[in-house]
Length: 188
Image (cartoon, rainbow, N blue to C red; front, side):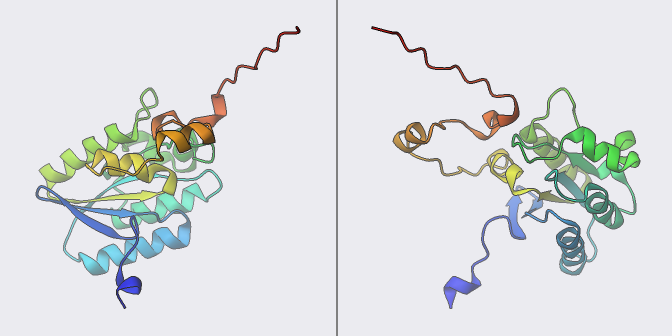
């Protein structure tokens, strides 16, 4: 049955960007991260990996990070940390606090939290080092990551976006500091 044989996007989705294999996976909690690591080792037994990872704030950030470090022999320099523009996304500071070794050598930018920037940087480094790039973690980061890799992500029509009050892109979806102007009603 074709319907059951097709893997949904970002579920160990494998793509090629030039000479680099890229895996997209929404592993976002410790058991899923551990499963991803086992699947990577089984599928690509003689390969080196580089990760772009972002997580949800309600997950065990330490265990998720340690699962990634385990496949990298604790080489945190092959991890690029990102923070999705979503209210449930883990802050970079929280991830760094969970695992001190990440603060020293992992790639991240507290001034420019762009997922696109980290994906592009990681892809370039993976290409140079002949590594497989794995983008994983929260589903909240996948739309921007996929766009950085050249996918045209579907968007609601202008009408639906206007009716829903959205009309925003992933980089604008930071609801935590949104300012709403109240409607002014004039008495007549």
